[in-house]
Amino acid sequence: MARGIWDYESAEGYASGDDLTGYRVEAADGRIGKVDKHSEDVGYAYLVVDTGPWIFGRTVLVPAGTVNRVDHDDRSVWLDRTMEEIRNSPEFDPDAHADGSDYHQALGAYYLGTA
Picture 1 (tube, rainbow, N blue to C red):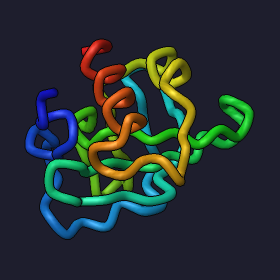
Picture 2: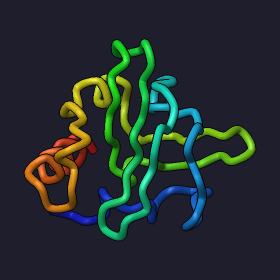
Picture 3: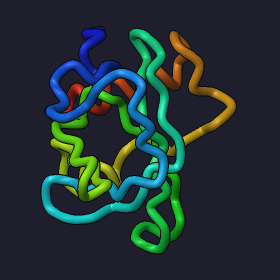
Picture 4: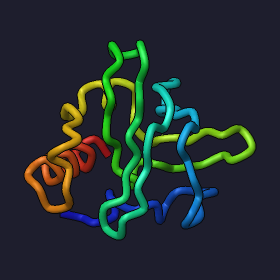
């Protein structure tokens, strides 16, 4: 599986060490929530997004490779996926998202398939 889906290398405005917690998250076609947590783990960076009432309070894990822009002045993160693609993503399982797990593989494959 391509590792690029799990890093911030193509995210304009992002620098290692940036704290994105609390930033608003925008899909390609609208707001989806806010960053609850983020990781910069090499080869496995991601955002955990609290979608609030948008999809019934669901929390989603989004690979860092889907981030195309970070605006620190506006405290927002822009994704290159649509609201529908985020809505249809695999259910977030906080106990199963270790690097290399079946969940990790399935999530990466899902987001690679939506590119």
